[in-house]
View 1 (cartoon, one colour):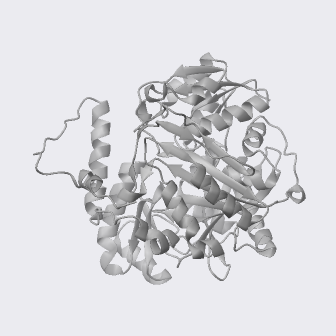
View 2 (cartoon, rainbow, N blue to C red; view 1 turned 135 degrees about the vertical axis):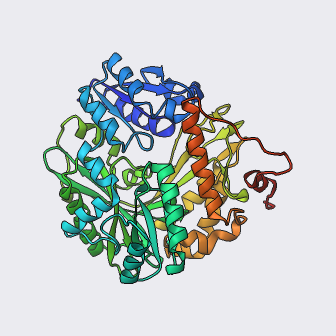
View 3 (cartoon, rainbow, N blue to C red; view 1 turned 90 degrees about the vertical axis):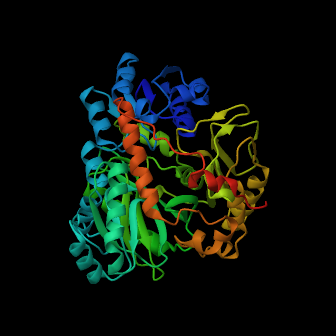
Length: 502
């Protein structure tokens, strides 16, 4: 086992990793940006070091600085958490070049699964069904139309190196091809550095089901069951649960074997998830493989009793899995609500600020993963996820009731949060029945919030590209702040003027 591990992350996930390391009797090194100088993960770690200014590009994405601190502190391994550098091949390579263990999969795996068309080819060759679409990047409108005519409209154009819904546009017919391609490419290049896109058929209201896999360096691979991730907004998960309400033991066995088959096809090691879209007839297709620890890992831990973070660290240290597939038992039901510092009554605009009062939920079967405290200032520079609230019960009904109680107990003052939105979802009759799909929020819960003001996607994509270019230029001293007349108020500001009654 390692003697010392550096955690290249922040917030609740940094705390989660530090706690796992303490249980393994491993010393920890925390890093922090200027915005995080008062963060909790600094207090919990054995050592802590500043890595620069608040913007991620100058701190949590600064590979050179992080590697330097790891070497100076004699850290034998680096845990990237999720986000930031967790799936960046260049970071894994930098770790390898400096004889530091990257707690995650190999560089080759990161490259293969980060390229969506390559991942599709590998899975198809391995006998894992993929969503109908192109098996290569498309070069022009004719290629898009050819694929769309073959698989049937509607289709998506997606960024080859994308994720999280960025660089993704829906095409309902051939008239929408030129604009969708232009916007997808623009956003793909600004977000991922490459304008390459491919085509994928849009499935009608599928479920998003992912399987947690654990794979050691001895060739042993198991899965820990599935997670239902269909409750999403703009392709971002809001609520996850396990087991899935639609799952049967027979289907779990079939999908679990495919998840392991997918991991074996790329010689996967570490923890990860194989993700599928499942149709109403229970047929399913490979969506992607997440080559890192997942935000929602805690609910799988609650129903299996297995500490996934500890297992990930032990795998990186060369230890063999202590479990066989037959040893894995799922007991009870668990749900996770992602609590974001966003205002659901104003189009989910971010709500950074100082937490003036903080009282987390508690009780039997409740788990809160968070780095909040009274007086903590939520920075504007990072993701808006501020807490993960999970509830466990002997069955789904009990877990749902505990989650309702926990949401009512959770008290955060000083900033707006998505807690009211989660309450609304849990009140929905279809959700109570487990009758969900990936468009559930848009179709069932959309009335809670105002329609966002930015129907012109071209303006949004253009603003995104201009902002990225400005930030890049600012780093080289070439940025010029554009001037505008005060009377031409930004639409981004206008939306904050509108608020629904609570």
